[in-house]
Length: 294
Image (spheres, rainbow, N blue to C red):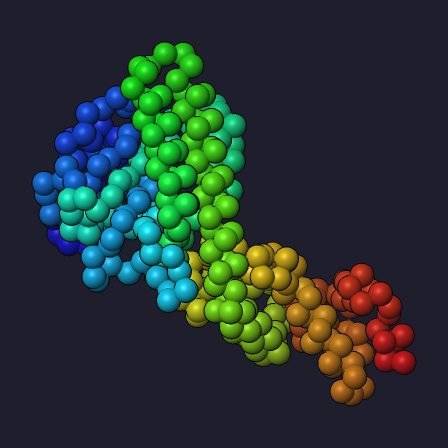
């Protein structure tokens, strides 16, 4: 981060920086073509940037099999990510920015954390097709029309309803991107599984502490949010469920490879008790360890 980074904590301040008129104090649509400064900013709001043609040097994670009609980049208020004005020169795109206070007391406020893509790294950004871009721009237009209506007692709920639909479309687009990246994701899952197995076999789990997904995400240069979503999409399991299945698979290998009792297996694989190991083994395998031994 450069020394002249501006910290922008309000929508009004953001509008002022980008020469936008404030139609609502908690939400705005920024046209990057109006920016006349080349400094970096750190934004204390939620934001979604639509960049049509990011310039070279901006790491937005495009792969050869991604669409190239535009890229969506997401930021949350507590995410320490700089927005570089230099990447957003004239005709480069738009930014929807909204303050967390906009969501207070709304259904969206209760579920905003479910939109995990706000926690993704820039290299995990969403690359969209022409149709997806049209849908996104239409969503911006609908929110803009509501902003132009003026502020009254219906404004917050109507804007949040439109914003929630907007975010749900982003969920759909990310789901599509996970599908189109299946081959690469399959390789990533193999690396994840290998890293988990190495960890479990190292007996680092003998203290009964559940490993954190962040330690595996870091090894793969992923955000924890993207790591969890990738694992869920490709395996149907969250991290805790998946690591439990890997424990049982390794336990099955131990049982078949030699004489080892339940207590020893439990100790090596981080089960707090032999009883807990047996309980999970029966649930997953459908038989007791003794029956599995044959």
